[in-house]
Image (tube, rainbow, N blue to C red):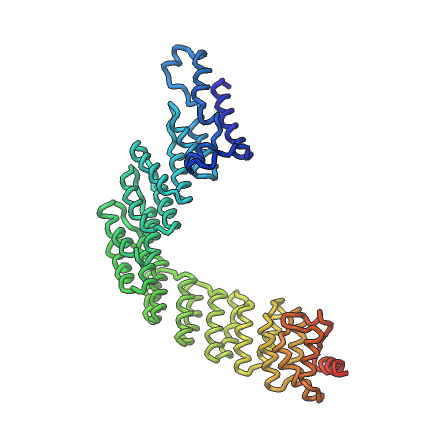
Length: 484
């Protein structure tokens, strides 16, 4: 290894050791911020050139004097790695400036790219803009990715309107933006309702003025924004213009419009759009069907919702747990728990097993309609599948059985609850204890007071309080023990 290379390695190693081992002497407190970070740099990195050139000048030949010697600060790739690994953006800027000041050293584009984004993401926008202007003055090529990332940094800092300026700055460089880069700018602008006109203006002028033809994704970005902004007519206009410009809408395009229509309670129009989609050979995705099922259930069109569920299987999209649960909830909400039972029974045949939400929704719906025995059966089925019911399921059943005077069944449910380590809330005991006391001639206040005295409180497991319950007889024994 040559002397220059050895000294170069020594300089960089010295800097890394000084910075990362926290052995750098702190600068005086009165220095301005930029000078403060410069003072953090070791002396060997601030003035490497004089030492290196003076020590190596005597050993160079006459032929080497007429050639450009390698930079003593290191290669551009090494400086780029040092900048990229530097967590302090201002210190990274100092490293860049010192390296750039050395003769025969030209920073690579990667160094500019890393430093500009590092400064922008830390909200040192003036320094980032200065570097960008410097890059432009040197006629240095740049990639569109730099500008999309820069626009995202401005947006994250609450300055999304700067994206328009950054877009025009990008066009001043010798780079060729692609539709995906245009889409990134559109996404940033369209995410803010007050910038939606600017996004539409950029979209319209992209092909004619800037030579960037919008693609299907470009249309989707604006369609979604206008649908969310309650301007469905503009979204429809954009959708129809795709066909005129020889662009083919994709599944997302149709889904965006369907969601917009359902949001406006125009579910019939959304179903027509689904038919148009199927006729053109598209296969709707799962989210498209979820949107339609939700809307149909909210509009109480449960017959149409069930038909749509059956239609999914024929059209190559197998219903999943979300689709089934949506329909089960729709039936139960409208007092048709029997139909909800049929839907749940069909699930295993179609390769989809009910989950906790399926059973909880169904048990609650059955209890609301007084179908307590059926509800208890589904609760047992749920437990048999090793699904741990929520305490609200047990509470609903206990309340239902207590209301119709079936205390044996209520105590069985309560026993099952305790087996699963769930703590009955005090309001559950308030329903059970009075009915037991009525038959044994005890005062409710004494029993409830005894429960509180012995430490049985909300959210506490009964086993922890030293109690147990196993059916109605056990309940009687327990009450008699408290009575004594």
